[in-house]
Image (cartoon, rainbow over all chains, first blue to last red; front, side, top):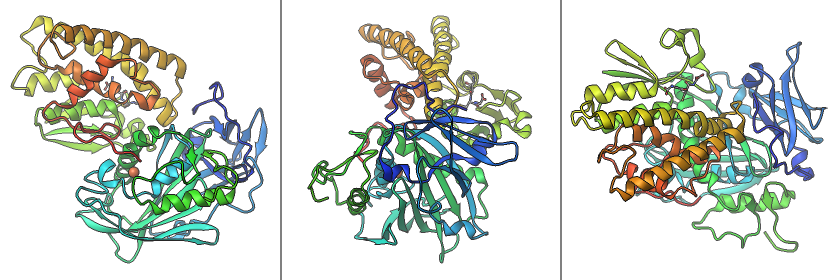
Length: 296
Length: 216
Ligand SMILES: N[C@@H](CCC(=O)N[C@@H](CS)C(=O)NCC(=O)O)C(=O)O
Ligand SMILES: [Fe+2]
């Protein structure tokens, strides 16, 4: 399979050390088990395959073998030197969960724009009408955003949802917790329709092809012993496919970090905090950095 | 009851859902885990369609594959108005067949570009995008002349046919494959008209007419 292969003119090779030193989710392991994948990572050609011993491997550029990890069903690769492993997803150790890749989908957008959209609840009643939201229930209640151990977390996010998950049978006031453990990946936890004491986990792990095009891997780990895999996938696929045209119509494609660049249409705390966090990390790829000296 | 073997993100399956919605037909959907499950390529699904593709319908034991064939069958059997597939009007019927073939072309180009971007299918992306533009150019010009004749749809009928319906999804989803409709104003007006049809329904990636997508 070839995903936006090297013949494409646009390359935008990444020189941003912060982003080069991350682990990036470049493939669903099942995808490379079916055959070699030729794609891009941060503007460089990337090849991923399973060798004769069954190990997943990757080579960047003309033919430079690079370090990989296999975590949570995905192949993670880096062009630099990450300081540790892939961020922890403790839910994957809870064996009563259903953990799977719901979809890998190409989107013509920068990674930070996709993460920002993932963190935003205000679009639910419009883009996911009848599923994740419904007019007139458009209000996003006040919520808390904190930085913890170098990750962003948002708590107490409440939203009225007609159909919160594949296993839902009625509308609920769903509670969300958001977690951003990686500049290009985010997770959310939401009240499980089948077990009130625990939360379903959904992640967006981004494979940045270039600064303005990505593949989004939609990770899910849910408490649902009723729905078939296909039903769990179907629900999440429907949701992300509704976001896709919205994301692809955002201009500029790079996320502006200057707080004056985009007047927020609504109070969008997590977005503001996320942009500020990217600035603080020193991320320059996939964004329009704030001018020198501007407080973000 | 009609059973539809269905994947929600498939434009070809959407064609069938769209016609059933317009005709007010109830159906039972059997979701096929097309991607990433590849269920349509399973041995089990081969019993339903040895070609390994969806949509397929099963109408009380009558099994039919291929979206355009299904449209022909459903309209001929269930459309009481007789307008979506006017079996008594040879000219409109001929034009309908011609535009259904044209729609196979948009599937092989515009829709292929969408599969390339979305799911990483192996296509010569420049070639399929160029092919889509060539077809969109032809369709745009055709619709522009139709408008001058006071007609709204691809055939010479004053009513839309299954040919309009077969063309709509690939056109409406083309931006996902990087095929812009900026240069095709008549084509854009036709998609706006199509969205106003009673019983129109959406799929992910296609929005309802009344509600413009909000920013963000
Ligand atoms: N001519 C068929 C083509 C259907 C088709 O290609 N369906 C796609 C999903 S949209 C599929 O099942 N592709 C799998 C394959 O052909 O390998 C139709 O119009 O129904
Ligand atoms: Fe969304």
